[in-house]
Image (cartoon, rainbow, N blue to C red; front, side, top):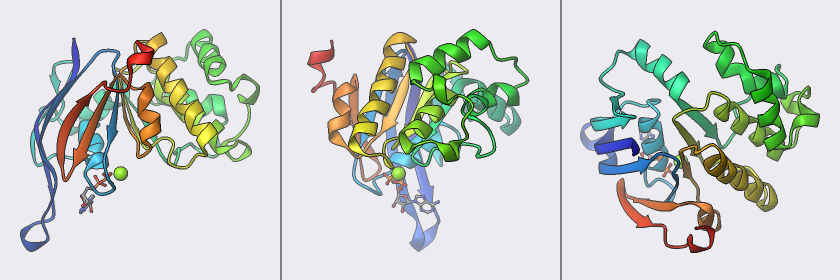
Length: 231
Ligand SMILES: Nc1ncnc2c1ncn2[C@@H]1O[C@H](COP(=O)(O)OP(=O)(O)O)[C@@H](O)[C@H]1O
Ligand SMILES: [Mg+2]
C-alpha cells in the first residue's frame, strides 16, 4: 500500500529573473514500511522536496497525499495538527529543547497534542535507542550521536505514518552515522515505520530499501540496487 504519493510536485522560489526552479515535476510513491533514501548534490532540491512533503514549505504546484489525504487541500490549522500526528522529523542539527531532559524531549510531541505518554512505550523507545541511562540528562550533557538518537525517539514516539530525515548524520562522525542509520533501519523493520531519509553519504544508502536521486529538481528512482544483502 502506498503511504505517500507525490504527484507532479513543483517548487519555484522567487520570481522573474531571480526565479529558481527547485523542484521540477516530481512524482513518486513510497509504500508502507519502506525505508527510502534520497541522494543528490548540494542544491539539487532534496531539502525542498522533504519540506514540501512535510508541509513545512508550500509547493508551487502538484499534490502530496499521505495515506490518501491531500495535505495541501486542508486548512493550515488542520494541516498543522495533521503534521504533528502523522509526520516525524529528524534534522541535521537535532533541534532538541535544551531545557528538557532526553525523556521529556522524546514525549514532547505527545504533550503538544494533549496526549498522555504510555510509559511502557517510552521505556521501550529509550531501550531501543540505548538511552535508558541518559533519560534524565539534558541535551547539553550528551554527545552528538546521543542527541540525534533522542531526536529519532521524538520522531518515533507518535508512531507517525512517515518519518522525514534531512541529512540526519550530517553533523556526526562515521561511527555515530552508522549507528543512527542502523536505528532508522531497526525502526523500519521492527515497527514497519516508513522513512524517507536524505543523505549525502552514499555508503549509508545500503541499508535503504530504495534509493531516489534528485538532480536539478528532478527525481530518478534508482531502485534497491545495493540492497540484496538485507533481503
Ligand atoms: N528559501 C529559498 N529561497 C530561494 N531559493 C531557495 C530557497 N531554499 C532553497 N533554494 C534554492 O533551491 C535549490 C534547492 O535547494 P535545496 O532544496 O536546499 O537543495 P539541497 O537540499 O539538495 O542541498 C537551490 O538552488 C537553493 O539555492
Ligand atoms: Mg539540503
